[in-house]
Length: 143
Image (tube, rainbow, N blue to C red; front, side, top):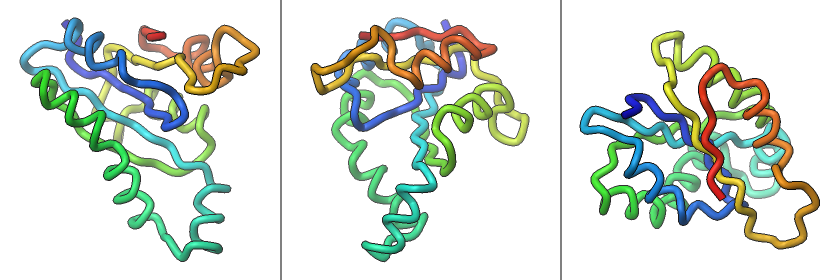
């Protein structure tokens, strides 16, 4: 079983299959870090046009995660939520490589590759491909 699992969460992908996979790889003392990265461009738009600042965006993202978190609660999976700001690929890779304040090492990274839209061109998305290629931790890609 894996103890520390990183789950980069993207609201444009379908994460309905993830709780079932998590149930298979977590133990009693496992923790899943649900990690969402907001781009600097999205942050600037939120501030300029909607008057939302970082704290507002974090609360909104946590609220939007509620259906997914309910599924994890039903399966008894322990989790914590982390929202960061920056370039998506590099921020995720930094999180995997350095953890939080160099205290946290991830045993596994789980990524969804099932896009909601059907007009995909490549088998793996750009972010999933880069993370899988450069991650020092094993990456499980779930369709």
